[in-house]
Length: 181
Image (cartoon, rainbow, N blue to C red):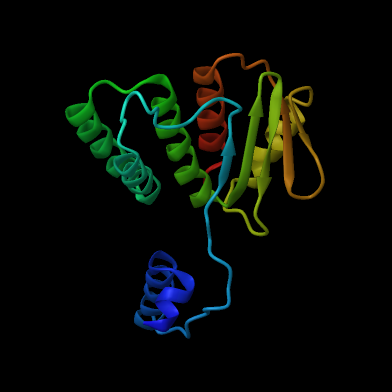
């Protein structure tokens, strides 16, 4: 119990879950390894649960945790249905949060660490060993050189006019779909 109070209950349970899952799979737990936080996605637009949609701060925090804990698109859809049922139609900022969470799920599956998208383009940062279709990536760069360029060994830059959040989400989803194996 002394360790729980020192590091906090949430971190303690995450460390415990990591150790148990490693032992179940026959591996030695690596408690010193950094946590995998998944992909970072920045669409340069608000992605949050507005206070006027859900005034209770504790309920908002619980909902943030539930959203970030979803593992599949289906889990996220079920949570959206529940939120609509409990609190009403989703405001734009919350729709964006859901879209960003979906992008994070897909990005994590193919080994993307970071996605940044602005009004005139952005970049994708890959992990050390991404699970992407390298031929498709090379094809994109060769056939659409004005839009796609390598920026170092692990970054793909793109230039595209994307003025609305919907355009950004659609562009990123289509790009990740193309790069997926």
